[in-house]
Length: 613
Image (cartoon, rainbow, N blue to C red; front, side, top):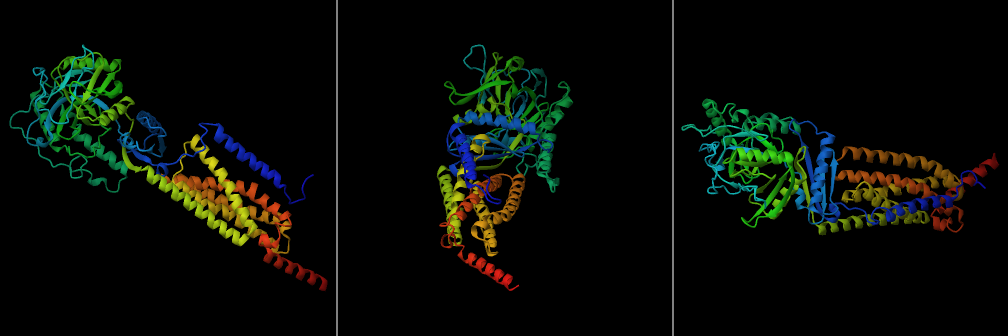
């Protein structure tokens, strides 16, 4: 039998709500890993979060395909660390790396572009003497095939082709055995020799801004966007650090060779190798042009040929400890094409130096003592174990299609994260307690229904947090906790709107029971409109915001939707049940005695007026 018009059957609503809760918690316990624990952000459990901002050589926005490829490569690097629970997500043009726990320091190096290239050394000078001496003459004749190790600058490293195979040969570090050859894809050509006497490089001041571009650029970047300014820095750096006339077009033309040497001297004098200097060409250098670069510790400057072997030809990279020479090294294995190019180059350029260039920094510049066949070689330098392992990991998983700069790096200890979580929980408990006290004092039994509805709402919210963390990787951070605390007020506001509508109906002279359906019909429209506006505001904030503010907007929007479920399926049926109970609907428990008296007085007045009429 259908209920009278305006009446509902609370049992059906409760049954539907129970089905929803049962379905959610079945998914929680019987899907995925079955853990009923939501994923927490690093600000709640401790860890490291690094935000990397992509930049392109021309200042344009990176494509979605490039960002996805970069995200995948960085994710492979993160997985190579071996830390469980690490995440790599895209946030607009940013890549956000989150590594939980105490092992997140390595995440700060994972945004390295890792564009490894092999270039031939044309000239080299110590960094402190670049303006006072000429570049070392090239060794293209091959007369200095065994240059030895004396005079090698600290940190310039050494390359060793020996990797347990007798036919691989060796490539030992040397200083002063530079080459005049430039090669591309393994083919050699004769290049610039020594500087003639009397040629003094043009002195130019180092860049005061520390960007490696000299002191005469970057002034017209005011008013430009950051991307445009970055693109301008890259183009200006290419003009003098990758000038085509660094290498003579005709090595037999003495005038061209002298001109090239002068250009080399000027570029070497201008190059700033101070540690910590930001290099705009890192990951943005043109492989088909020569390059003026520093070594990693800033003690040596090099003029290098165009790339003859790309890092994309590396098949594998491992970090090992060299028992014979001491120190950590990175062993490289090339694919078949890379092995052929490397073998041909080393065979044709014995006595020359080959520079291993990582993101425009020379990691090592060994002298080639003999042909190296077999497809294996070795990078050595002043590596610790962690540095060697980091380099091996980034080379193993490939170079990034974009260059990145770290725009934010945050590390939170586990202790601080726990304290933050406890503070958030305490704040939520205090908020609930204040709502409970207010509702209990003002609404009596209806206040109890309010707290019960909030508790049932919390059960749905918790299940959704667990499932969203499992399905879409959502992590609850402190901003999300704030969103939930604000949502307590939003949900309580829906109850207040409903209860005040009930009072309005009872002031008109209706009983508690008859006021429920009429009050609900009017309050429902207000609740829907209010929650729709709140959800729209949360949606706009989520779209426009970045970083942690998104977490606040997401939880606020989700709580608003769940508020509707609780109000429709729990609060309204509970109020309807209370209105039908003589004991629970009594003025003493309901707190509606004063309102009922007003309604009774109005009814009496109306009846009296009707009789007199």
